[in-house]
Length: 56
Image (cartoon, rainbow, N blue to C red; front, side, top):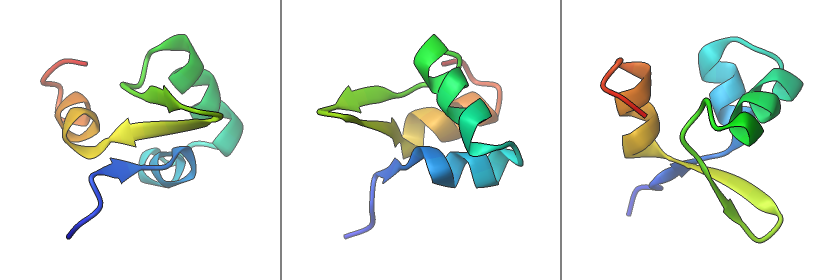
């Protein structure tokens, strides 16, 4: 089964930004994400749609 989420480090690489910028955007809600315990996870389908300009 393929993973259905990205980590903040992975999206930082995809976007070409630093890890701290990616975390800032996740915390502010600019990047679609959810908190799971102490970790932030980014659902692949929502992130890919957001990146394609299809909404958050």
